[in-house]
Image (tube, rainbow, N blue to C red):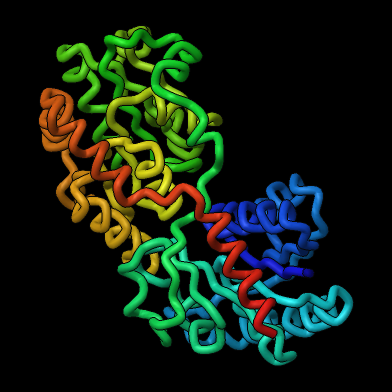
Amino acid sequence: MKVLISGGGTAGHINPAIAIGTCLQKMGAQVMYVGSDGSLEQKLYGKTGCPFAQFSSKGLNRKNLFKNFEVLSTDFKAYIQIQKLIEEFKPDVGVSTGGYISALCMYALKKKNIPFLIHEQNAYPGLTTKLLSRWAKKYAVAFREAVPHLKHPNRAVITGNPIRQEFLSVNRKTAREALGISMDETVILSFGGSLGALRLNEAIAKLLPMAQQAKLTFIVGTGSRYHEQFLSQISTQIKQDKNIRILQYIDNMPLYLAACDVAITRAGAMTVSELCAIGKPSILIPSPNVTANHQDKNAQALVSAGAAVKIPETKLTPEHLYQTILDIVKNPTRMETMKQNALKIAITDGDQRIASLVREITSKQ
């Protein structure tokens, strides 16, 4: 079986593509990845050892319609190149994990009568997923909240998101030993992605003195974009406090998430799935700067399950965030309830479920 998997633009599209592809390879499939023409695709797909191709593609400009002439020209060139790739690789089935490039790939497959599956990571489907849902044989969705928004809801299967095994193989004790954190410390982990989240960083910087008084251990992933700015906002005393750790980038997220008691973060699809997989109580501050406000819907799925607290960015203040932290960590019963509620909605074998759907599609051809 030959599988063409396309996802591009962000790690949130690329990493699920790789997880699905890796699982399919273990089942004996040949995998080809297709991404947009970016350095992230080069880095991540390049590590897989599988063949991969990159093409220039652009999404429609909704603010300046005149710029779409250039967009359409770029995408048409990519579409022609993708058709040639399909003729050479001869895939039996396709998988879309999102991004504009995957829309071009799956449409090219559709024109050649090659079946494909779409994987939607968010609680609210993106434009690419909605567009492709009219032709896809199956929808592998991470959240049941996404199903009503798709063209043929009966094609949807709840698979969850692919979770890296590293998140499932480390526990709180071993993680704390590895990081030099004692078991009696109350640890709060804050992060806003690889680039960082400005409003979240600003709130954290102002509440750190309060955290010191409450004897909380804080680990802050500032992100590369705002690291120096964050350091300039906090006092020398805080910089030297052994219970305050400031990191530009958290390069071993499974370890840090396992070690903390509460996570404060954005509500990206993969992040919320990982929080559920390890049963971690969380405070979610959805980014308002995403299409269709899908992070808010991701966060709400956890809030509705009793696994998280949501604070809209418009209501984020150091005082509010600090009080929310205390309301959780000072109530062990609530923490345990949030943990168990997260575990109840967790799906930890998403890659296997999606790979099985892919095989199911090909077996019916």
